[in-house]
Amino acid sequence: MRGYTILQWLTFFMLYCILGWCFESSYCSLKSGHLQNRGFCHGPWIPLYGVGSCLLVFFAHGHEGHLLYLFLLGFFGGTALELITGLLMNHIFHMRWWDYSQNPLNFRGYICFFASIGWGLMAIFLMQVVHKFVSSIPADWSYLTFVVIDTMLYTLFVEDVVFSVIAALELRERLGRLARNSEEIQNLRRSIGELYDRIGEAKQEWEQGAEELRNVQQKEGNVAAVKYVMESGVSLAKNTVSQAASNTISTASLAADTAKGAVGQAASSVKESAGNLKESAGALLKGLLKDKERMEEELAVLEDGGNAESGKMHWWTKTMLRNNPDAVSEEESFKALKEAALKRQKKERQTGTLEHSQRNK
Image 1 (spheres, rainbow, N blue to C red):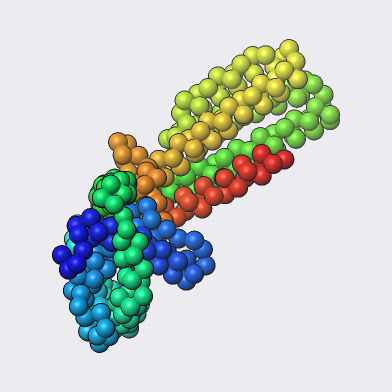
Image 2 (cartoon, rainbow, N blue to C red):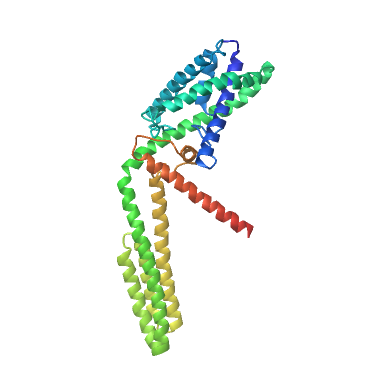
């Protein structure tokens, strides 16, 4: 086959996949200002570069010195391969991993004129410089060396591709669920906002009540303070029930019972009654905070396009979105899904930084 054995072609493909990943990740990292692991897969390889480079080497055999031929081969061949790959990915996964829509002379964001020129120039560079180096690497390998190295590389490569395809198909399903859950997400966000307000109000009321209790005890004595505790305990329970009935019925009931207990014991001691009132308020706040955590967890699942069965996005799926910030989709919910993955990444980094600083103290 054009002067090379099957084992050599297999090695060329893998080497060009790796070199393509090095080029793509380096270029995008410099462009964005931070390290990126580009590509459909998670490992250090991009299959598109491996396929394109091997096709170029195959069709350029015997014409390595004809620069115009190499340029045109790269210009049209690279453009066609990029277009076909983009169309297939969009059809299968409802997304693609690059977007030229902001570049002039582009076709629906799949290809553009200046990228095609880049493929042509890269074809010349590859055949004049890179392939001479790549072809020399396995030139003296024995049959056993080929088998061992190719087996190891392709085992990792195939496993990576399989998991990446599964993750991409999962993303497609999550896009559909996210679109269907948009109204529920908005309602849940409003409920969480209202719950934050209730928590703030409950804390403020408790602080005010504690201050007023001290003032009553100092000015009017213990009997008046007992009476105040009795009235405040019942009022606190009633207010909390009316404000958070939809989310904290059980907690409010517990608080009411605690408040009644405080009423029954109030005559014995102002200190004990005040402690029960504090415990009652603490139980109410604890219940509100638990509801907040539960609702925020439910919101995180919905924002990830998940449900009770699928849960939040797995690491493999999230990383696929994070590694390809230029990925686009015709689905309106894709932007929200990508933002959710990036937001979770920022939160994880902040948590990791905090834990690291605490360990160093």
